[in-house]
Amino acid sequence: MKINMTRWMRDIIARKDVTAIPVMTHPGIEIIGETVLKAVSDGDTHHKAIMALAEKYPTAAATVIMDLTVEAEAFGAEISFPENEVPAVIGHLLNTPDDIDRLEVPSLKAGRVPQYLKANLLAARSITDRPVLGGCIGPFSLAGRLYDMSEIMILIYQDTEAAHKLLEKCTEYILRYCKALKETGVNGVVMAEPAAGLMSDEDCRRFSSDYVKRIVDAVQDDYFTVVLHNCGNTGHCTGAMAATGSAAYHFGNKCDMAEVIRDIPADALAMGNLDPVSVFKDATPDQMKEATRDLLERMSGHPNFVLSSGCDTPPHTPAANIDAFFETLKEFNG
Image (cartoon, rainbow, N blue to C red; front, side, top):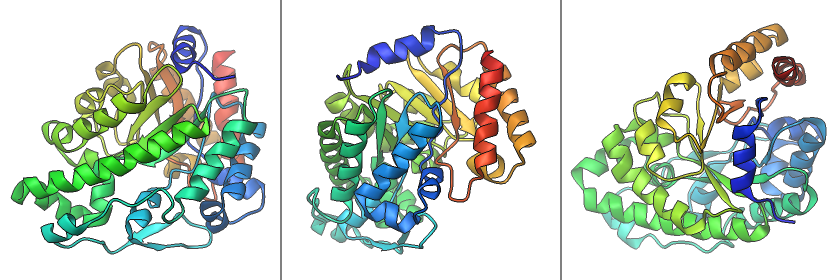
């Protein structure tokens, strides 16, 4: 049975207790005794990690790995694959506007995309007690990985036409990917657009939000939700994020959650924003509890708040800290 995501979000906002959707898959990889390399390369392993977390923790939704190299690899970018760390783009594929002209939008069979679609399909079939959220990169962040992040910032001012041409191609591919994710049966997608946080609110609208909105308008409905993630936003471009019309927004630890939620519609979810490294990974369980409790208390007047990590929890995040996170939530709700 399909989950009506519009109703699901309304129920979250209406309920008295706070729900939690930390973005995490790496702890699941460790639970099943596999490597990050295996999980990001093999859909079955990826799915087993998602399942392991769903079985262990009372998350309001399950999430896939936040891997910002999948789409860039499909375009032809070179990727580094450490055995137990997240993949990374090596160098950059494009060097000039002429390279952008020659760039072809790849098929969904390129790179590891088929394995990610497989993981989403298996997760959607096996996890039926809560929504499953797939993942993709945002248009501007993909453009930055193909052209180089510093160079794309220069290009948007020196050759705006070329920048928009690249963004058109990135958007076309991400839209295809999101439609394919939707066909797997997952209930939504977390679109990671952290590079958009490098721009002003005005530029964020022009070079990110306008393109994200095009994807949102094409795929979002009552049964498929777009969660826009921007951990680069310090609070300066929340308005641009909200202009996309996404049903939910996910914030990083660089911003004040109590401030940014004011710019989010009351009927949209605002998710965040405990530091995935200094809190989830490096803190003690007692420090984890203190940080979680503090955020919950500060956000208590906002019914559309969803407790989460500020980004994907990294490899080697201690299970004791994740346990402390959920224990504190349970105590707060109790």
